[in-house]
Image (cartoon, rainbow, N blue to C red):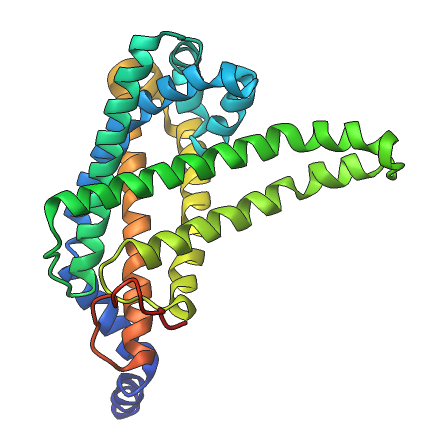
Length: 299
């Protein structure tokens, strides 16, 4: 018994124990469970208007509907995607100027509210009082949403056009024939790196606290792996235990989507908690607000 107590006392002196203590405190101060519900609500609210917006932009980008469906399928549990696919296809094939305007307004409003909720949760995690002007805060949220949409369009264009561009340039530049296979192989590693970069940027830019890049990668890796595992878990769960979703098609689907989005949001917020805990554990300093834009942020 004495040996166990000695081991416990030694463990309490380690950085691992200190990190766990900091993590639990930051998780509680960030009110992660409640804020994840708010974030998942606004994510759901912006999802279908965003599909309307993308559907009206497809003719301008010269992209087929099945290309977008392929990417939606990758991030949604399989059984849920099968149920929602007709609705998603209908939204993507709806081309109407009035619908485009409504979809744009609703998508931007709900997505900006989601970013604002994300910022509020992270600020609470970093012990920051969000004293920014409400108008400036909303403008910042709109900028983040716009940047996210641009990044999404770039990723879709890369996935859709990279093979076409390589196939076109192969005879002109006398490229090896296996380049097309190489491009197809490296698409998903590049997508994973892209998701990691987007997450890291969100974790550094969104909070009003000064977050250092050298600590932000930890939470980004956790969130990226967690989101991939979450999608696979829900796919397996619905495959073997999802009979109720098929029986109560509409209600069951909605419940599962909300659960999935709730866990999705909680993983994102836990990534922020991990970043705050790592920075406090190793930086050994109190969190400070971001410096004025004119000053260079430290790496």
